[in-house]
Structures are given as structure tokens and as C-alpha cells.
Image 1 (cartoon, rainbow, N blue to C red):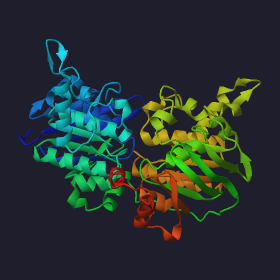
Image 2 (cartoon, rainbow, N blue to C red):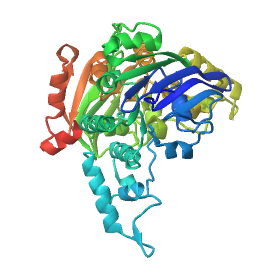
Image 3 (cartoon, one colour):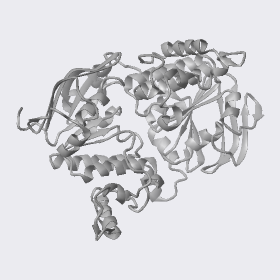
Image 4 (cartoon, rainbow, N blue to C red):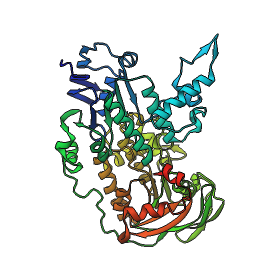
Length: 506
């Protein structure tokens, strides 16, 4: 192979039961090149990355690194080569400090005693050099999700890599943290380190990547220079095989009676929140990270306890003490972190759909499993969920299909109000469009939706009204005709007093 290739893959194939994950995929990446890797969920991106890092063995094809063929790859071999990956699920030791995570197995010591001062000093200097301000003495579990992600990224750089793979690195990052990450990537590029950048945020691909490889259904569509593609509009048809002209298309649903009303609701991270949701309506909750919007949703659903305030469903005041109470009043909640709070990863698809719906499949106190399975199949077909079998583990599905299974759970429950918290984070553009169309179907059934999203084009494109939350308080309610990114962001910062907090949030 040419000496200027860092990584070269030739004719890579990989098959799993019932699906061909990769079919004759060939790519090459040069030193200092930032290569975007895009495709819908199930396109083969994760499988390709796991073959590069040695987590999976290829069925056929060849892999070269710096001109040498790697005949037997493994996680250990790939690390020795200098290949490191930062996955969506943060790979750090939660009970150890930040510094200990860097020095794991190689702590500086003298006569068997760890030199803690030296370790903290070196770890702190390293973080400062890449633009991060995080206390290295803190344990990982004390950090926010975004901070843990940044530490996972920093940890991969600690080992002086030759190729770094980023898998959805900005999904939980603020704008400021994303800027820091992009500066890190540009510095790596200058040092001749190769980058593979996987993201469903296609604007990011055009901002940071030199080239982009597109996969579809396990096959290579092609590799292009980002400057040749020019913009997202030209990339999307190559990814999904169809035009998406109206990504946030909203049918003119009829807005009806009030389903939910909260009055003066207060909790640990929010105060005096009042708003309502009517049938056929999408109401957005928008705010900066940490504004309290997720806590509001969790309190309405009974996960967190309200300190004061009232909740009404269809005009009647109710007391929600736990999620079961919320369920009984027709409220459903799709949480922000679907991996930790939404799915049962070691259970199959059938279980994940029916976990709150088995009451509909009971005969004389016993579960009629055939009836439950029929229900699962109905919603799998309705939502076009890509599976091998309803008895397949949900953890084996792509992120988008996992999200569809959770949506199937709530649609099967026939909830009157559905709260979606960041429903499309880490989901490909095609599946996003399908979920948006599904919102229209939900509204046509005279249900209401509360949508929490950090992505302004999404929340502006879908909502009838947006309630803006700033530092736990309502900063304003904005009608659709008045939507603008600048106005919404200005309201989001209304009660964020300190400049430092604003910098952290954006």
C-alpha cells in the first residue's frame, strides 16, 4: 500500500445472524486526515469501527496499518498500534479519580508508595494543555455526563495515539465543550494523527472533517471531500437514498381540550413553573444544559418529588407520587438517557415493549404471551423497527431502533400525554424524520406532546409553543410565529446571572 496511508481496509465483510453488517467495504485514511463516517442507524458504522479496534473479527478482507497487514487484530493489538476509540458509552473507571484513570496501572511511585502529588500535577498539566478545567482529584462518578465524556476523550489522547476514533462525541457536550473538542481535533491533525469522526450531526461533519465516507445497509456508497459535497442537503440523499425536503414537516392538527396543566410547580432545580398542553399540540421545553427542564419532566412523571405546586389532568387536580401514578393518569415519559433509564438491555424486544403493557395480555391472572407478542409485532411493523426477531436483545439494535422500541412501549400504553426528552440524540437523519412523522400520527389521535430538545432547528420546527427555562425559572413562552434562535437563546440566558455559568452552558 502507499506509504502515505495510515489505515487501509480492503473488501471488509462481516455477517451476523440474519444480517450482513458489512459487504466489501474499502477505505483508506492518511496521517492528519479527519475522516467523517456517516450513515443511517444499521448502516454498519459501529461494526466497521469494532473491526478496526479489534473488538470484532472480520469474516474476510484485509486491514493494513502504516503499510503492514494486520492479520490478527484484537483490542490489545490495536492499542499497541496506537488506535484508540471514544465510544458513546463512556469508557472510564467511575470509582477512581480523574488522575487515576489516566495513570491506571502506571502510577508514579517510589518504594511501592504512589506519588500522589506528582500524579495530580501531571494529570492537571495534561488537561490544561488540551483546554480542560476539571478537578483531577474528583472521582469520575462525581462528574457530569459531559465532563465524563471529555475525560474519556482526554484519556484516549494520554496514550499518544496515531489514530483516534470519535463515536458521537458531542451528543452530551455543551457548545463550549464542543468548541474545545474541535480545537483538540485540529491540534491532533497538525501532529499527523488520523481521526475517524462519527456523528449524526451532519453540520459538525462539514465543520471539522476533510473527507466523509458514507455507508448504507452495510455497503460503501463512497468517500467524498467535504468541499465537494458543499452542504448537508447534498449529503442526506446519499445517506438515505431519498430526498428529505421537509425534515420537520407538521400537519395542521386540530388543537383541542387541555390534557395537562401545571401550576406553580417547584422542585430541587426549578421554581414556580406553570404551563399547559392541549390535545393535538406539541409544547417545547427549551433551556441550556442544567436549566431544570429535565427535572420538570421527571417531576411531572413522578420520578422526582415536587416541593410545591399543582398538577391537573383533563381539568382534574391529581397527586403524582410515583411513575405508576403518572401512568394511571395517561402520562408517558421517554427519558433523556435511553441506555440507562429507557431500555432493559439484557431483555428482548418483546419484553421492552410490553413491560408496562402486560395488563392488556392477562387471562385469569396469567400473562398470555402470544397476545403480548402479537402486540409487539403490531408496533414493530407500525414503526418500521429493523429487527431480526422480537426475541432479539434490545441492546443489539441501533440507537434509533432502540428509541423506536421505547416509543412503541408508550404508544401501546395509549398514553394521552407523551413527554419526549432529547428523543433524537445520537439518531441518524432518516430515523429522525420517521420519528417526526410519528409525532404527527400521535397528534392526529388527539394526544399531546411535551418535547425537550437542545437542538434549536428541531424544537423550532416541531413545536406550536416553546416554554423557555432559564436557571430553573420560566423566562418566557414563545408562540410559533415569534420563533428565532437568537430570541430563544436570549431568553434561555435571562436568569443565568454569572458570565461563568453562561460560558459553561453554551
